[in-house]
Length: 246
Length: 78
Image (cartoon, rainbow over all chains, first blue to last red; front, side, top):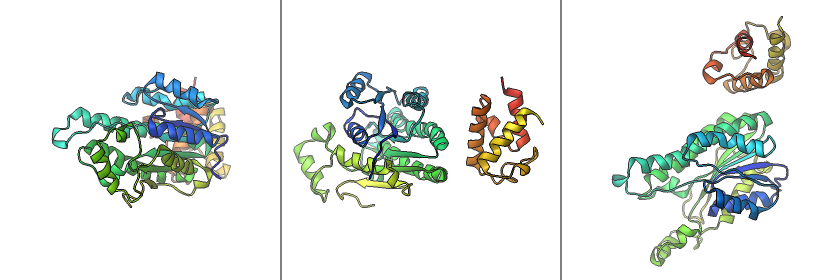
C-alpha cells in the first residue's frame, strides 16, 4: 500500500525541517521529485543528499512571476507530468495585530496562501489532462485554533483550508484530490529555541506529551498522495498529538 | 466544411462523449451538449494543444458554441 512508484511530485520549501522530511518520505515510496526552495545553495545540497533522479527547481515564492513559472519548470524537469503537488513552504512574521505592519501581513499571505493558489492553478492543467492529481497543502493547528501574534499566519493557514475545499469540489470529477495536513507543534530549530519553561508549558497542552516530528507529517502526506486515498478530498488531516480535535 | 471545423468537432465528440451529429456549428457547449464549466476549460486546453494557438481567458469566456471556437481558431492559428 501507499506505493508512489512512477509518480512525480513538486514539494515547496523542501530544504526546511518539515519539507525535507516530506520529500524524503515521498522519495522513499518511489516518487520522483522536483524539490523547490528559495535558497538555491541549500536546495542543491539537499537534492544531492536525496540522491536518485530528483531535480531541484529554486523559486522565490514572494515573487508572483517566479511562482507562475515554477510548475511549468517542474513539469518539464519531471518529463511532462506532475502527479503530486505539496504546498509546504511557509513563513512567519509574528507581531501583535495592533503593531503588525502592512508588509508583515501581505508577505505572509503572499507566500503562504497566494503562492499556493498560483501553484495549484498551474498544476491543475497537467493533472486534468492526466485525469489524476494529488494536491496537499501544509496548514497548521494555528489556522484552526488561532494564536496571539500570528493573525497573518493563522489567516494564511485557515485560507489554505478554505481554498482546498473549493478546489476539491472543482476538481473531484477529474480524479484530482485536494487536501490539507495540519501539523501541531513539530520538533524544529524554531521549537528547540524556545525557553525551557515555555516548552514545558507547551507540552501540558499536548495529550501525547511530546512534540511531533517531520516524519509524522511526511507519513500523512504520503497517505494523501497515494492512490489508496483517492476517495478522500477536501479534508484536513490533523497531526498534532491530540492538542486540538477539530 | 472546413478542416478546422472537422478537427474541432472531433475534439468535442471525444471530450464530451456526445454523438457526432449533435455537434452542429450552432450547438452551445453548455445548453446543447451538456458541458459544464470545467469541461469548457478542458475543451479550450484541447483546442490550444491541437491547433497550437493560445486562447486567453477573456477570449475563452466568449467561446460558447462550436462555431465560436472554429471562428476563433481560424482567426488566430498560425
